Amino acid sequence: MLQYLDKPEPEKEDNSDVLAACRQKIADQEQRIAYLERIAEVSRFLSSTLQLDDLLKNIVQVATELTQTEACSILLYDKATNELKFMPATISTSAEKLMDVVVPLDNSIAGWVFRKARPILIRDAKTDPRWNSRVDDTSKFDTRSILGVPLKMKNQVIGVIELLNKKGDGDFGQDDIKIATTLAAHIAVAIENAKLWEDLHHAYDELAELDRLKSEFVSIASHELRTPLAVILGYASFLRDQVTTAEGTGQLDVVLSSAMKLRGLIDDMVNLRHIHNDDVQLDLTVFSMKALVTDVMEEFEKLVKVKQLKVKLQMIQGDDPINIEGDYQKLYLVVANLLSNAIKFTAEKGVILVELSRQGQKIYFRIADTGIGIAEEHFSKIFEDFYQVEPSLTRRYEGLGLGLPIVKGMVDIHHGHIKVESVVGKGSRFTVMLPIAPDL
View (spheres, rainbow, N blue to C red):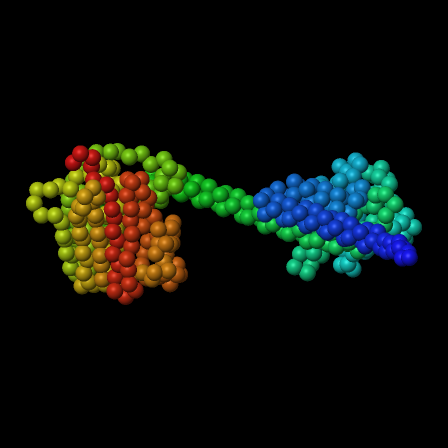
């Protein structure tokens, strides 16, 4: 007779330790992901704002959350007093009272972190010989444990971040030091960015003030010079009419010529000031650009002859006047300044080309010369106020460097454009493009 025996059941394997380890590993990974997300949030905030106080408040809030601490303090080094001072972003009870508290570099925990440039972890602050009770006395905050980390920028310590009182029964550990060190790097970058922004803003303020003073000086100087200059011109003209000798007439011509040149410089300064102040008033009329160019050519005829220059004039043949709606005097300045420059920078017996044409709804005025030319790196600068291609102390050509800025300003307010083409030693060509008069 067969006897059936029950097979013994296999013993159940105890996996509780493995599961617990897996759960702990998952929890650690989740905690690390949360930490990285918070750090990424700080990085995004850092790149999106220059408001230092808001940024530091965000960082110290993250610091207290990630390290599970009650408070966070940020102290910056003050070179003037050789002490550490609390930043307004400090989080603690009655934090505003700490703004007047300074922390010495000697005999203080924060001072030790600053001088040694390395973190410190103190589990019982009051027993430490470097403990300074003045901060707690002022803020009415009870400090028990401290984690201090230096703030470094370009290998230079600029301050200290302190995390205070670990919550619960735990103590500060290496993870807390890593978190604090990472956030300290963000704080240092934020402070450096804020300093650079402040310096830039201060520089802009100084430039604005200098520009205001320059405009005020030009206004006062031009006004004060006009009256005595008018007297000089009046008496010189009167004397020239009275003098009968050739020698006396020639000398008075020199006086009149110099006075007229000075008046031209004053007019340039006034025109430039008006352009920059956006208060240019246009006296709009419809007139012939052909007639305007002809008038300018006649004005400079003597100078052209003195330098024995050859001027080639190319304008549309026939009855087309090439009408434009604009301010005659201001566009006269454009043509006159460009022609004056061409004459000035072209050697004797050189060639100047003056061209006027129209293409579609645009008028093109060009002046080309065989003068000294302009290097390409100066193209964008020659339209700046007072800019001179040659060094001011050694330059061969007279002028304040206002002609081309005025030309550009006058062209711009007429909704036109100007461009330059030039080769050093071979000459330059300036092209002015202006809209034609409507319906003409």
